Length: 307
Image (cartoon, rainbow, N blue to C red; front, side):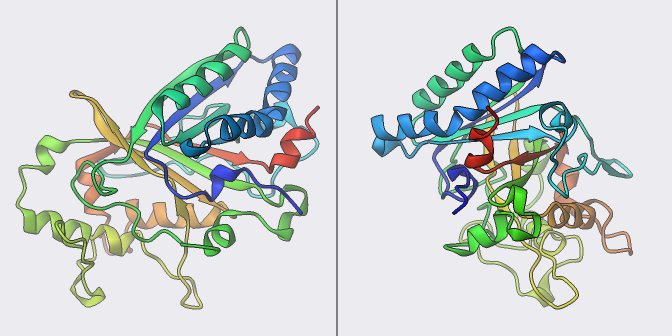
């Protein structure tokens, strides 16, 4: 049975680090990375045994542009560049990087320990692109004040949504990841009336009650981000998004995990390009996508076979 990386479908943690890196273009650096990646499952298991209450998960994923450097003979069927989009003042940029480390647990100190360990192993072979510390805010809210992730699949359905199956047997147990860092304009957001905020989200703020479908504006976030396919089934992704911030920079790390690259692309198009009648997601008027990257997180077995 294929062993997937545990962090792909595990429930949310209170603390997370999103670390992106670029790898030196040399055979020595590629070999070093293969060694490091092959050790990830054992490293995670070691931390889980030593700190059982921390619920540690280490997910590693390889960038779409770097994949050929690491594995030129085998490539996930739908791994392609991040789908950059723009519409008026809204832009979803493509900012490629080579590697993602998504480290999460109930303890920030242990997340730091894991990050430092990998950084040391990759010394001289990788350059840090971004390091973003994320945290669970209040009762799982975004910094806009609204509960986030209410549409996430639950239970066994998480694996059905997030894990590649036999449709791509070599990469079964893997997951397509799309990562974006958004910076919120909370000053502008907090200046608009509560009713306008709720209409933009399509749900109430205090008690997280979603509007009835008929009551949602065409520009509402829950309208633009909740899609159905031609057979009336929900188009789903598994979100591992968390807020980040300090007193000067605040936002959301949006992380989509899915068995296919297509659902994220369709949702992004709906949010940015709208419904064909000019109705884009108005939440995008108060936040800016700074990064956009596409990765694939292979199964634990695939990682271990790298060496």
